[in-house]
Image (cartoon, rainbow, N blue to C red):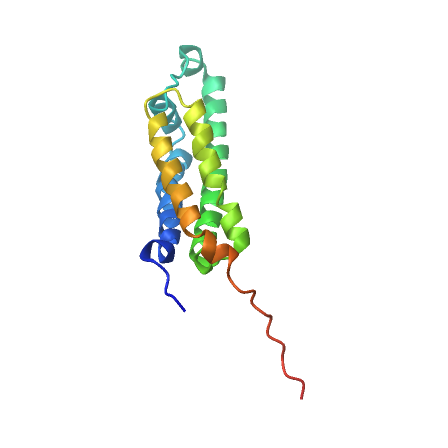
Length: 152
């Protein structure tokens, strides 16, 4: 049996790094929702002054920031778990699920207004390359027969 290339064996690491890189941002946003404003500005959206000066609007932005960051933390932890287990083993369902990443990066490219949108193309290319490199591993893998306990 031919051994796998290094890039096939370690493609799962890209997804670990990807999910792990988002976790600090989500944690910071959860702990201090006011950081959401500076994050939005980095992506090309200025906080309207009408919101910044209104206490109820600021409270709403804090709520949305908490809500989005808890969802992001949870989804990143799921992604991390899938990367180090099922995707690493080459399971088809995990390979299909991870097509979420290129779709998300492509969506970000079309929705971001700042120059950061071009970074999305780099991440899009890397995730597509990691998925294409692991295609054979996921789709040509022999099925694993369940273990049947011996009857005694």
